[in-house]
Length: 481
Image (cartoon, rainbow, N blue to C red; front, side, top):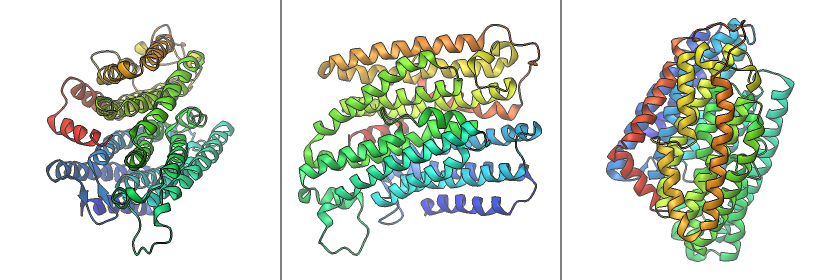
């Protein structure tokens, strides 16, 4: 029942937002109230999954161990992003950059985006999952072009075309996974459970080809190299709250789709096949950003390339398997929190300096002291500095891989070191020095700080102390990979 209520709350939020006229504050309050209810319901579902295993409404809506981790991450980051959005959009309205109609469009599309992500996590049917993830593309394309600038419109079209083509390839792979059902009567939609039960009917040669299509297709949405070219443009042009959701949680949802198919493929052709592919794409996704990050001139693009790198680390974790899979799931959680901290903090920097160019930003620690500290904490966390959780997950993944793939691990470690140096170079330039005289000192407002502080507190707690409930769910989730 809770699953349908979550979807129902989001749908009601869309309807209520459409009815609001000339009251942007009401739109923000509806979104915040909905996000709080969604988080409470998600925590209830988490508790049910922890006690009783996968939580199901019917054959087509169910949340398993991995699904509830992704769902909880979405709910937490959405609450922070929604909370932040009200003040962010109000400030943009006061500067005359947007009007009420744009704010209304933002919240309606935000709810639809969230609806698509939650449904993609819940559905047990691969076709419905594909439709849901494609729906995230359609809803966010308009948000990427939110400001109506030529560069933003170009980024939105690039995002729409590349992701749609990629997902079309993923759809072809999905259809190939359905080949055992051809010619046999079915009165119901095919599910992941049906595939698992009928693995003996699969042709290994077809499954090998199908998994490549799925990995390339959904890997486009994840931002794995070389299908990553849309991601820096899209994530840098979207409004900051949307960027935090795109980098923080949407990539996890798309990765979840890949892993659903991985379980089936491993049952047919063995795990070594999918693991080799994940290691290849994972290493490429760490290596390419390591060189590109040095030349970045836009701090939001810098954060976007960092997301590509971390999806590469996750891919390596699942490629190595065992403890690596456990660490990869935790890495997804830590990355979501740290990247959301960075994007929301960058929003405050953008509102204060009016630019996303690194060369136009200096002295953040003096101009925005709280934001500067929060951003620096996010930087330390995302680059894997101890004692933050990403240090432990990256160390665990590399430790698992060193025995079987020492050359891969050596390259990955060097690339991660280069990324840290490049990141430090840009962050130091932004945090220190003297800001232009026309830039006034002082924070934007408490509601642009509180949600970031909330995420920092959660990240710090989980870095030093991982609750037994989270540890148990992650252990059960990783056992399938």
